[in-house]
Length: 305
Image (cartoon, rainbow, N blue to C red; front, top):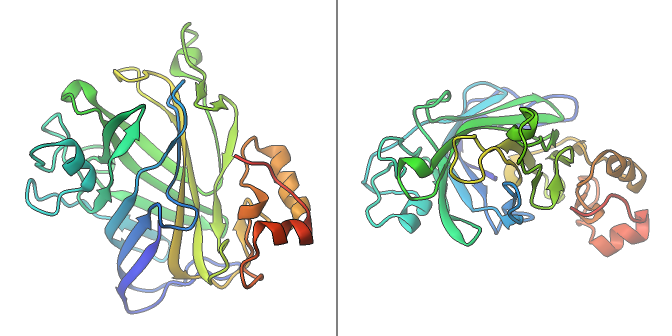
């Protein structure tokens, strides 16, 4: 996700040892696309399904409601333009609703279609749930940003194929849970998500890893499909959503990827799927070092995903 400032009266800057400076930033646009640094990300599972590239997302009208909280407000104008790309790709007559005809889509989040197991799936932020269609992000400290919303997967077959699930993302660490069946002591659960197995840990990050002076990072999420889902009920899933921004960043790299190969190896010892060493670009190193240069100067560290 990239925070593209349209207009603001005071720049929110993350500096070492502090959060974003208090300001009255207005109307951010958020990007996480194939053209972003490192792309949009990866979706794992659910269950036995292989991992897949994440869909593109552009989120408009994001605003700071405090120095450390920003919100994507709910907006829906029915079938009038603009309709989200995912709905256009999966429906002959976009009307601003998921295929159950009653759950509205937050049209501030322009979510592209998601191809999962060979089928196009509409994914979006759904209205009517605990978050009332909003996406809320909070900066807890230099190391941690969390993002919450009600995410909806729509298989396009009506109410039976519309699955709503809570979304809790973090720039820290997430652990893949067992299937709900296993948690309940019931046989038949699938305790993996693609190449990940239950208990595997994935790491997010927060800092300036491409060395351009702007904030970037990754949100990680793990969870389970509801037992009521017609699609992989109870199975775990995980995702890594990469983001880059034009939000000025003046601090040292924060989060789960410290700057030395030795420290990254310590991260690898704690995590089954840390970021590769080549992706651990440092704010202090300009121009950005290539993977070959990192290996030459620091040796290898961290494992691949």
